[in-house]
Length: 505
Image (cartoon, rainbow, N blue to C red):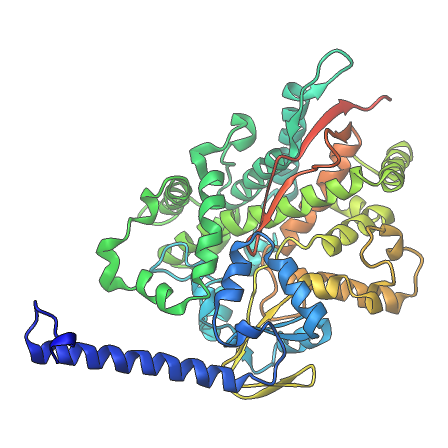
């Protein structure tokens, strides 16, 4: 008895502590055994049946989306990645799971997207009724219905990006001015979404720097924040109001805190005795009944979620364009001919861009080859289900693996691993619809979780490539090392160092 007695505690208390610890260990072991037995029939890495470490290691590796793709390639369209997690790489089954009337719902993992630990937003809420009510209030703003000069505001930021490159980074025969295009594109998307949200851009393009250290902070914290989503018990502790005194106020955190303050200040102007009334996104949220607290949460989500994915789409597609000479020449030729024939304005309109077949093929192929949204985005059912012919026990999280189905040879052809926009041209309409439906899953199109920012993102893509490539030639400085790209459910990209020169007339 003396061997297990703790000298600073009475013997009876020490014994109780030992027994309690033993019972806790037995409980945790029993829970692990139970989890293993529930999903032992699902193939996957051996240790993924017993521990979350495979999944968390993948999340922190910088290759999260590619490791999920590898799991599907090795184990099939359904693969186990943790005791209570599987990943699905089948587009048809995912569309069924995401269906408007499906029995699947969003699990606790989404609470990791509470940028304020104590307030939900449209992306973090797991209550379907609250989610649907919020979406109904947000959709008129995101869709542009309630926003004056939506296209003009985006045009202004495209012009800001062009001006930045022309005035500071234009190389000539006598001047060499390398530029990290990945960073400038992110400045552009941050200014676009803030201009639409608040009626005034944050000013990244004019400042030409990471204001408030926002980008630095989000890039360093986002991988860990999303990893915590895989640890519900940690997430509950962090978001517990009882432990609030231990946590810093979100508006005092370096980087993101400044953005939160800016958002809250913009929101504060729209409420109170003498509210400012504007027909921008925030004005639409107010008009459609969002409370001040809800508006504060959504304004922050707009900036974070609305800038990173759009930036990834633009810079990755630009990388594919400038490293494929045939694609580059054909796209510039379509732009040049459109200008000569008066089919392209300056700046190009969204309608004009939609009538450019090769541009649209490039946009879709870019989204297919390098999907910007790669978080796990799991769904869960309260009842046992069958997915891809595999029994999925109730309460099992099903993540998706976009690279698995976006490189599917049955859908996109034997050269699905190649960037070839021509696959979208002159094909059977049914084939086009099948491919388009699959690629648009990046926006969760057709589901009750469809991306609210889809309209704005598509306008950005329609305008950015044309306005850059009509004016500039862009060349990678080191094709053997084109960028630094780290995947932690979203892509963190930098060092896309290029030379920008003015195109000859």
